[in-house]
Length: 186
Image (cartoon, rainbow, N blue to C red; front, top):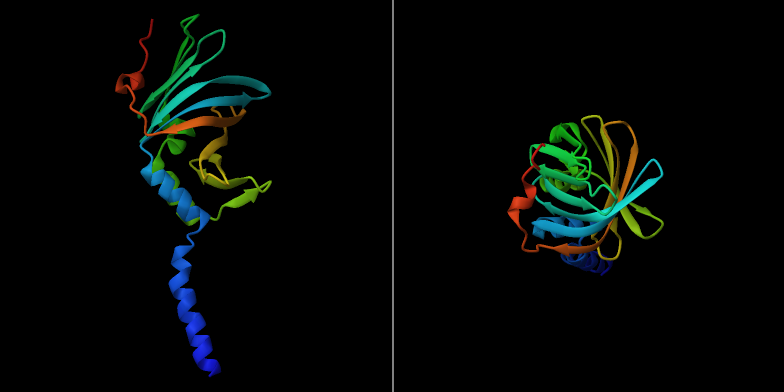
């Protein structure tokens, strides 16, 4: 009789376990469904905070308009990253692969990294995954309740700590593909 009870519990466990997907599996499902994100952001670099709005289109495209005096824009077309100060017309161009954004903007890379690692809970509010690749250490954060991507922490090309918090997130919006064209150099 005891063997039958143990067998019944064993089979119930096997049948019920797939119904309770792990947090990592749920985050991966959300990422798979996401083609683009539109959001507001707050970014801190060495105690200096900037705010603005961004659009990410997977794979590897981003357009950000900073809400500051310089009206800075940041654009990636998937290969290059341009940062332009629209007031002074200063223009910086970087190969995307030399920045941590190349990894953050690669949805398939993120999915694979999440599959291979264990997330950790931070302050019982966030799920954090630490990714180390190509001399980049990236901490990606998801909201524990909604499982939405809420930000990341990296170092920029000058080894400054960069913390990006995103909010007012909208998924799979209709977006203008021309946003991801690099700005003209003057």
